[in-house]
Image (spheres, rainbow, N blue to C red):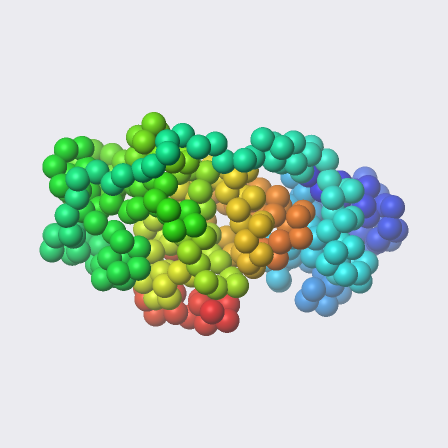
Amino acid sequence: MFKAKEFLTDHQIPHWDSGGVNGIRRDKRCVNSHYQLPCKKCGSNGNLIGIRKSNSRINCYSCGSISTVEFIKLQLEISWTQAKQLATSYSSTAVEEVEASEKQSTLKKIAETCTLPPHKELSNRAKKYLRGRGLDPQILIDEYRVVEGKGGEYDRRIIFPIYLGGKLVSYQGMSYIEDKGKRYKACSADKEVFKHQDITYGLSESKYDIFIVCEGLADCHSLNSVEVGVAGCTFGVDWSTHQMRMLRESGKKVYLMYDSEPKARKRAEGLCSALAVHGVEIENLSLGDGLDPNDLSFEEIDEILEFLNI
């Protein structure tokens, strides 16, 4: 976690704090739970930047979420490399825990090979279900080798293969009927080459310099139905150190587009901070309360991608 108070004090940066003025006059935006100061990103003279004391999350009322590295860079007018070094030196347990866990972050191989369960081409009913969820069946077939389970526990489930470096390492099934029980059914743990929760889905196949990270398959493929290969997912909000490291080592600019629930937002903030400390260009995108990527129309997704210069 960013030691915000120590950083602000060491570098004599004027800010408002409930414990003292510290060179900034309180305005109506100042609250006791935050350190507040003007934003150098949007150039406002008001106390638009708020640094939450409980988790060091940095947010501007105008610009939105700002990473620790970018905040330091803007405040001290230094390079990204220098800002990254300072972010590391002013980070405590959260970063230390990530770095410690990375010592054991080599992907553990479970099985030598992974084989899809009995399957067939997507049925018309499966395709209709996908279209109803805003996904393009043909793109999923052509680009992501999606098939349908044939008999057994994956019957009437759409199977999404999970690849790493072109090799099949796992898969996940999605039911297209309402009475199937649990919507998603992952590959059995003993049949995966690597644990699927440790793979950032779609990352190794993406040819873009920019990558959008969503929670689940339906979310990322809503975006991929408009622009193939632009998005992937972490199979839920509980991202792993392995997934974080894959994103870090990809060299891509990362956009997080998790769902709008409080837990999802909190986990997105955590991933954003963990990547920013390592100098990754990252932005946390919020779609607004109650909205998920899979809720967006093709036109809305196209507008977002155009805004991101994709």
